[in-house]
Image (cartoon, rainbow, N blue to C red; front, top):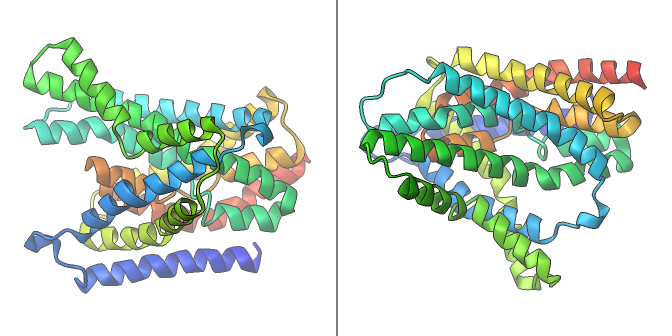
Length: 336
């Protein structure tokens, strides 16, 4: 592994450690005293910084230069894994009792929270240095094209799934039985959402053909650059506040699915299903092998589901990535 990639990984661990120290020292407040800085930072990321990043990405997306065959070869197996994990988790929790509406909502959101941790990789902080170091400018171009759709597609699909499950849980708990009311609430909560709404707004802006005004573009870029350090600090804070008790088993399973099962599925589907070879195949498999990204924790924070597991998974998978990515590179070398 190149020194550039190792330095990036070290920077990630150091930033997470700083967040953990801030949490242990209660520099930002004490959750036991009614102040939960981890949740506050999570809301700031979800409602301010991530929407800015998504809107700017969508508004500036150049669909004409997309390598669509590679895009489909990557996202088809990733979405298949997403739906498989989601369905398995829903089946497992189908008869679990809940005491109140809040517990029912947390349970309803758990399948989507587990699914995002399995499929959403750290495609920027780790992925971009890896692509640049391993594949050069040509490979980095393919990687960037995939990354431009990564959050837009996965977060949008997961938002629809979780909002449907939440609407169903509320309807069952309240015993309203009003299908139209449930459907209307689901549509409203899905569209008026800090992930979906900026994507739709960005698509509308893109459709006009207008460039983003300079001041607006700079503002959105500034807000978007805050996502990475904020989320890394949030991971450290969450480790300090939530701990890892009771989450190790789920985190280990999720990390194995992320680092081993997902890239294996992408390799099989892309290579033998879609005929992808050479550099594009290497890029899609290594992108699938990225450790779990911090958006998994933001999503878990937003829906108050599996926060400790998401935090532990991000840390475990990032450590595990150092061991698994050389294996995937060796496999890809044999197929070259």
